[in-house]
Amino acid sequence: MNQCDIAIVGAGHGGAQAAIMLRQQKFEGSVALIGDEPELPYERPPLSKDYFAGEKSFERIMIRPEKFWAERDVTMMLGRRVVAVDAEAHRLTFEDGETLDYGTLIWATGGSPRILPCPGHDLDGVHAVRTRADVDAMMAVLDSVERVAIIGGGYIGLEAAAVLTKLGKKVVLLEALDRVLARVAGEELSRFYEAEHRAHGVDLRTGVAVDSIEGDDSHATGVRLADGEVIPAEMIIIGIGVIPAVEPLIEAGAEGGNGVLVDELCQTSLPGIYAIGDCAAHANGFADGATIRLESVQNANDQATVVAKAILGHPVPYDAVPWFWSNQYDLKLQTVGLSTGHDATVIRGDPADRSFSIVYLKQGRVIALDCVNATKDYVQGRKLVIGRASPDPEMLVNESVPLKNLT
Ligand code: FAD
Image (cartoon, rainbow, N blue to C red; front, side):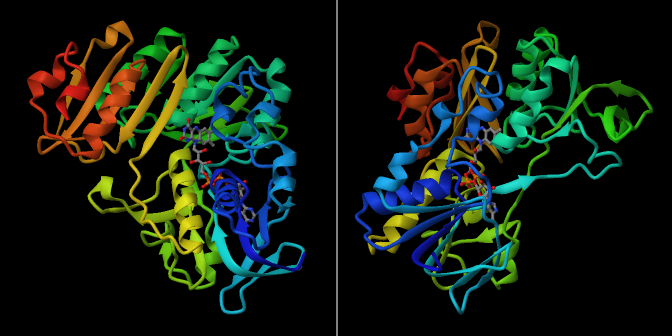
């Protein structure tokens, strides 16, 4: 294939959903789904959860079975990396120099794991958790691993810690800030998860600076902290965020930096080029209009739908409420809204019961909820976030009052 009507670069959550939606919306032209990973599109969340734990096979995390793509006439171009975009000529260039001409381009490339800028970061035994290949590489050696050091106390680091602890590994988790999940949640949730991990045997340390990764014959043997202590480990996992994969688009002239800038229809500043998912920086109504990137399946899927509709001439601006989940041990966290900038919190239920919700308020209005083993609050609280409700805090804290009564 050297030309297509719609080229989708990135065969992850957003790219796959864009192809699905285009066909669902009766787009009849040719669609190419291009991805640099060798696999058909698969779900990424299980990589730090049940796939890593060996509880789910790869087949069970595929977004659609192989025949689905053939039946929908979506041309899969897998194991192919796009290195350049010529926005005027509507042409993509692959790593091997081959080209593909497109009518419309959807850029859905996600991001690549941020590299820890310290000596030893590239030793064998140092892992990221972004792709199936990353996780398969860890699973292949797990039997010979006793001690794991995880650098980064975000969701991915914490989920990996939960899986590895359950598998009987000794886990040390190192977080540079003074609490885990500092970027995405309030202090109460951080403290709850810190206590849970410690209760499960994780040596969880906050406020620690990493100096280097130590090695022996090119294989990592431990993590040296700034104070000189060395944490011995046969496996080191780095989970310190992602860098959006947008270089070819930025080089082609698209506006952006930390992600490519898109408008409410996910259009970039380059005509005929859209961007969605983790790599798309957009003004978000649930962040008071601030330009942000969201790293969630919800966002990738919803933006894919926005783009498919826009391309087919039924534009509907992106205005979806952000939501997210995380599974650690027997704890199911469900988050709705964005808590950044909150000025008050209300806790419904007792964290000691391991079923509670944190309601985040800003100037009296509900902006987000973190619900731990509390699905009813999550479902009903959604409406409070969407409606920017300002309920009486005394009613909010009263667990016996359902949130649906407070909209
Ligand atoms: P991706 O799904 O990352 O897909 C991008 C694809 O593009 C990748 O295959 C990439 O290799 C490819 N690519 C990049 N550059 C190029 C190029 N130049 N040419 C060709 N292909 C390219 N979200 C949740 O909502 N809940 C969760 O519980 C959750 N858990 C997660 C656990 C893990 C371990 C990870 C890594 C992520 C998790 N996320 C979770 C986040 C979620 O998976 C992402 O937000 C989502 O995958 C974003 O979709 P995307 O299409 O933007 O990018």
